Image 1 (cartoon, rainbow, N blue to C red):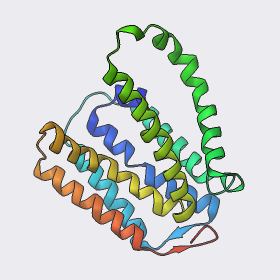
Image 2: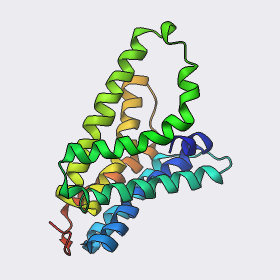
Image 3: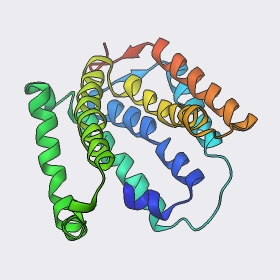
Image 4: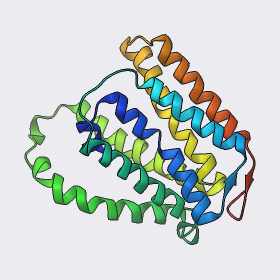
Length: 210
């Protein structure tokens, strides 16, 4: 995912990120026989369009970066759907921990040289504090909450909530960094919220429904 973001313009990365709910809905249908009502699928489409508009303009080369982002979205969808199938047999903390242990292997293989090259003694306190906060809240708490949401709501309904991330990011940039939001970005954010609302109100049919 990070390599894909690094190689891809922000606008294209936002569009690729918007495919997450689509993959989740597709896998929910194929694996769990979970079907949303037409309003639910309309909500997913509106939220994806909203994220694309939030991405704004931008350009640049796509290629490998887009492929990495789409692959990351698909892998995340597989992991999320597994929380309601295989993961349902284990305590939530155990399942998330297993995912972390498996995911750490490529990080250590490819990232260890860069980590060892860091001047740890020279890093300021705020770097350590930020790293600890990110590890605790953005990883542990967020992942546990996400997997529990998938178990309770199902992949289709839970997935569309991921499109709130760029909306909250844009609002955070406006509040804390003084970044301005264009009318197009505001419209995109409104579409995301509308899409999330439609999907949450939609009925779920099938064996994976709730």
